[in-house]
Amino acid sequence: MKNLQAGIGIAVLAASSTLNCGAFSPTAPVALRLSSTKLQVSSLNSENKDGREDRYDTAELMSSEMEQARLSNQYARYSHDDWLRHRASDRFFRNLFKFDKSPIVKNLLDEAAILAAICVGIILWNELLIEGWTDLNEVHHEAPLSGLFPSALTFKLALPTEPFFLCGGPLGLLLVFRNDCSFGRYKDAFHYWEVACSSLGNMILMAASCTSNVEGVKQLSTASWAVVRTLQHEVSGGFDTTYEKDLKKNMPDEQQVQRLLSARNKLHRSHYNVHRAVDTFSEDISNLDKRTIINTFNNVATACAECERLYLTPIPLLYTRHTLKFLTLWMTFMPFAFYDVFASSWNHTGMIPAICIICFLFFGIEEIAVSLEEPFSILPLDELVEEFQENAQETIEWMEEEQQVSTTKPVMKRPWV
Image (cartoon, rainbow, N blue to C red; front, side, top):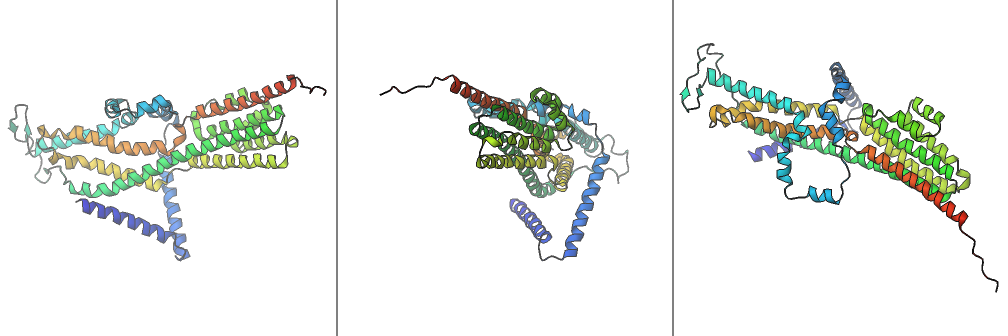
């Protein structure tokens, strides 16, 4: 059986690679490639239309327990004590006893309840119509409703286990690839956000070391903070409700705030403000230093574009939806295969907790992939923006301190020899 599963998995990978190579082969006929492209676009448009018909209350979803748990359990930076606790030997039992506090488990209670109801329905049908039931004294009773329906309708609700073993391999591949893509998106989001913040910080430091114009560096730091805060606003969606208030609080120029708020592309407008801020002290620095600052900001623009791409483009919906349908069908029909497996338990009731645990495990894998697919709502963006603002303010304070020291320091004259 294991060899058969491995063979099926290899066959699935070989078939998918063959299809992909054929779709992008440069020697393929142009008409065939155009027709396949049109077919894919039409199928995507039809699925998008179907998805838009299923309208949800956005405010209700944002206030749901799962979304609030995502906001309250944002991934924070670990300290030394946190890493020690994370590696503690009792982590297995500690996390197991907190199973009921997991937001993933809470979000899958409906699925577990549906599968448990299917198990109860299978048990009642088979024991009341087909096989009979056993009381608490281990006395077996005949099926009380065996003659109520025609013989054609009194069939046993059970399935063999072999099809589920055969489908387990391809389903595992789909779930592994989906989680790998989702984690890659989370890693890329954190990487590009750190690139944007560190590049802006280095740009402020370079400007502070090249010029003595404190007001110009202040304008640059304010414009740089506006870039980071606007990027957070663009990738946070409706969860960010303090964007306008923060701009008015931290940007002294009210006209600049209004222009940023009224811009069609706020992030692009914030980039424009940074370039304008660099021009304020361009006469005090050399062309090489100015070019270095602009090149550094180009890395920021690229990182912002990548963050927007991750937020606006999910994993291909065909892959996500097929994986979800595959997993749903596999879990829905599994109780039928569990009926004979738990024949030794009292009235086959052992299948109910077993199917609930498997539901949390398998649907939890898909739930983790969904949570990581849009990573910005679980990243500690508030802390990162606040840290960037504090670093920029410290840089300006260092400039002011150095200027005060240079103006108050007495000039040492050499004695006349």
